[in-house]
Image 1 (spheres, rainbow, N blue to C red):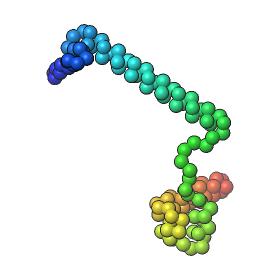
Image 2 (image 1 turned 60 degrees about the vertical axis):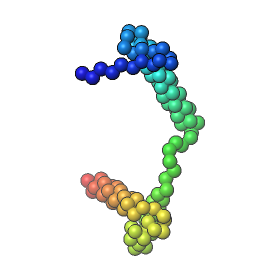
Image 3 (image 1 turned 45 degrees about the horizontal axis):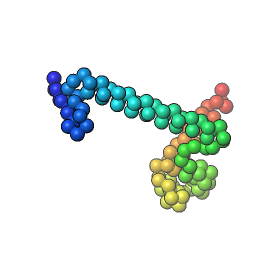
Image 4 (image 1 turned 180 degrees about the horizontal axis):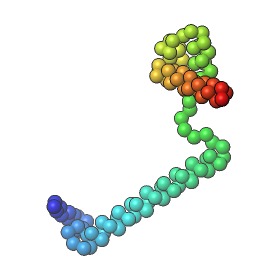
Length: 111
């Protein structure tokens, strides 16, 4: 077992005795309390913003209609990505998601 003693000479805090341990526990408790207050205020602020109709989060750069219009014209994923200034993986992900959606819709309509 590793024993470490902390003694602050300038603040007169000795963590090797009961008073020092109590002091450290109090500091920890106040820090945890303050952190919980910050979390509660953050959640309340987000809930209030949503109640006002504010849309939170990052704006989407991906425009699916533009992607599929260019795809129907026969452009490759890399060419579409270059034209729309997006990553090729973003384009291929949109195409894959569209295929899965159409597959699910088609499977749902067959039965």
